[in-house]
Image (cartoon, rainbow over all chains, first blue to last red; front, side, top):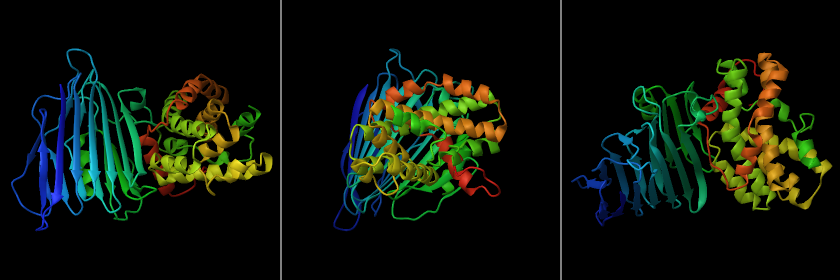
Length: 232
Length: 202
């Protein structure tokens, strides 16, 4: 299944963030909340089982100056292999002049799934973006499939963060990889808030070189990892 | 080739011997205790931090813009402890290199450059620069393991010799890698926070 969806949010003359363009294509179904306010809330609903092997999904999100968007998932995503053995892919592009919070629910990389996920974000000088990603290596008792996930965020063209993570390789068990943990969570916060380095045995929050912070947590279950990220 | 050999030699006075690439923290936590767990650590380090460093050394050797590379490597190194370790080793290498191989391009490096950029400029041939960097990404932690854990030097040397350093160097020449390692980032930051005696700077 190939699908592309687009969401554009802008600021109206009353100071409310409003959805100006909303183009869904199954399985990428965008559901705006019926409310008026400074922050627009949109849920990203997977309206067909996806991603399956062979799927190619694209979502483009634009947020204008002064506007603010909360984009949330509603359920965990199961990455599944398809009948053809083909890999699947997803690309999410953000063009931000206002503020975006993207909070999808956890993603489970099931056995034999082969997926490539890419997030690209370009921010203007005062834009803010926060992104969360929680990956689970397989369902209970299951060996994970393979996933390559990468994030590249730039501000006015200059790189802020560029990270790729591979799941489902010998790196999973290496203490210089995922250290045998089943759940890895990251929370990227590109804003003007200054957060000093802090951390515990398997989590930390660090300031990035060109501004913003990244929180990382490894754990054996989603609850532990999500709690750590929520507390930062 | 001789420059690459000198840079990869543990007797090169660039200050690399004070860095363990996360091995000291991994050993302190009991994550690396013997040859099999060291092999897994070194393999993971080679494929993540090693590939990343080798890719930037190759790009610098190809003559790409050093300021852009410096910013791109910062963006791929979220841990401040790892950025500082890379720049400290870059400074140390640069200090020794200014005497040994003075050149205009060496002077065009930023004042506190990431080590892979210094290696790229000095070695000046992409594959050799990548190979030097990939090797250094594992040889330092390997010798730290011998010192910290009292492992058999012959056994550790055999592990290093069997690692796919050449494959990683060849891959590093194709495109700028961005592969991260969450555990190495966590270990590097925890090492800085650790109280008490530390033998290594990273």
